Length: 603
Image (cartoon, rainbow, N blue to C red; front, side):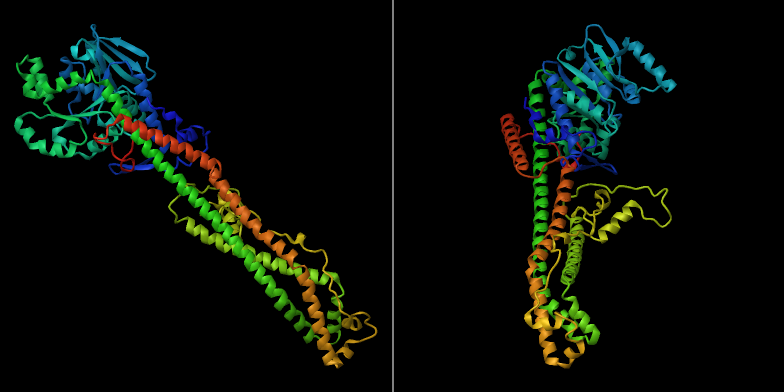
């Protein structure tokens, strides 16, 4: 039997600790039952497949198990009684107690009532059991503490098979999902009994679709067909709507057949349609391998579809992560280019223009004071640091705009990371204070470093500092190299007055021009240090977002970085290849396939 435990996806999910999430686990496959829509996670589907394989392995060498299923009041128990030739399935009791009944061969007839742990809590005769259950039902007793009923009967038909009589359609619900799974998984064949008066019922058809996912060979029993005329009226409809679901379809009247048995009426099997049914059931006792092979084929198809879907998913997410990280890198390069251009313009144009305007517009003592400040090495240092702070704020705002834009984009992408916002209690807060979540969103507006492309999850990630400074990388002092022509003005204030400078307009202009050029030259000399400090600033935002982005991806217990991602994909491709080879070996391509997973829930 195929080794499904070698699945890398199954290994990933099974290795999770409590509270951990899997990248393969947050994508429920939607199904619809009536008006209720539910999700079935990939983990559950894979577990279902494991259960099917486990049941097949444990049932090897045992008698063929035939599960009789169908809606309430479809006549399942009467059908079983007719097949066995005696009353072993108690119709009203099974429907009322919702307990599975197993009927197997025994020379001495008995009834064993088992608890939920499989322990026999009552060993009685058929008659005693009937009286006991009727008494319990009158008292309104709770039968949920009983696991199943084992019935032994001396019927030749039971020498090669075990009948599993189920309580009815209402037991196949999400609440009893595990129980349903168990008896379907353990069955080799399924006889589905349909009330001919309720053909096409939505609840019945939905339940049939779910059971089909087991891959078990299914045989349709259209019950309560009491005459040839009734059969002719429904035969075309049944063939059209159920012909691709059941391997064989039989039309019977279980009530008339049971009456024929109890009254010892001749020809009852032919008249009620049971002759061919009993021949078919007898043949099933010798065809266990057919059931095992077909069930394995169906389950491997389900396994293959899940793995193909998950392979596509991680590739999409990998591309999504890579594209976003590449976009971050492109944005970072763009900001650096803008920083370079801005510094060039500032030094060559704005700095010169501003300094010249200040000096040319000054008079008297103000002019003398301005000239004097250029002797202080801290003056230009302050100017450069001020420019750094201005540019750092520009970088922060730039990342904030980009971040908000990417957050909007992220909310529209195909891949939804299925993370809910945390809920914070506001009890005990001072009046007017912000909740933790409100504070987080305030930080976003200020350029907080949060996981870009995870819109709405900022509160979970938590805010980081909005202002990042690398000013320590700037020069401690930037001296201005004063030319010889300026010594007379700046060397000794006592030798020349501001009024004297003003009197000589031409000399003033030349001196100011020389001084401004000296300032520009000094600023140019430390341009690289200023530029490197600003590059470090934008790199900080870039790496911080990349780090948070990868951290978010890592929360799903999957490594999207190389070489881990490549190694996983290689193992997954090898596993899919082995699945394809095994499916081809089984060769059941001509049998009806179960409904696609996106159309229904599995069981």
